[in-house]
Figure 1 (cartoon, rainbow, N blue to C red):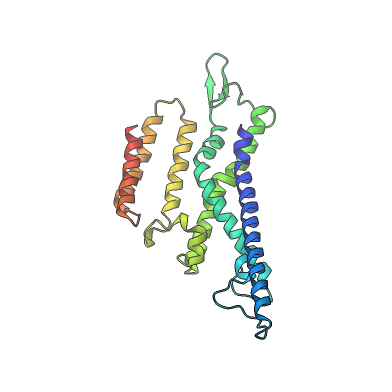
Figure 2: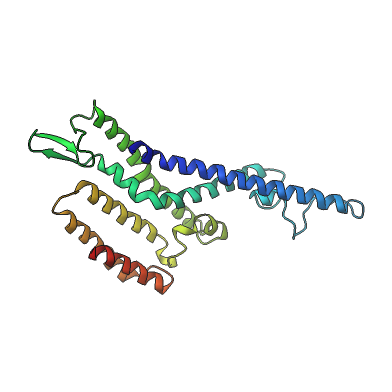
Length: 259
């Protein structure tokens, strides 16, 4: 189960690459067929022009490469395809990010057994936390350390890099950025474009507390402290563009505190 959860982001990203690639290929072939048919119909009455009518989608446009170009169209198409796949993968990974983070962090959480005077994993009490160089826990330890860097740190870092680069280029609210990565910031006010990263930080903190302080008396207090801080920040900033979204975000935090 652990290995499956760790490989889930790779499976998601690979599936997104295949699906977006197939969709782009189908769109390209349909546009190419339409272009060939229209050219064939017009070749007897007008000279062939190497430009495309404005109301007709060229094969390069259909693939995602923009205006027809002789040079660089394949590279532009590949980059556009990769951008679509990455945005879809990031959207799906954001749904399972909390669970993956909890599983990874849970590997490092061990508790001492009073009877045997040894430490065992809290999430899997049958596995002793004896050594990081041999044994079953050693394998889980190094795998979790790798996935901690790749997923827990890597995914938010990738989000932050994408948003920061587009913001510095003054293209954060360009149509191409909105279509690919708008789910990361479009719901927030312009000055709070980074608020999704704040929500991710809250999720990571809650996952760490849930895994490390499992069945500990301080777990509820730590949870409520994090949620109270999040509630205060949410009420102060009101980062969402629409009023009902701010109300919904505040209500969701209150429900978590009450639960």
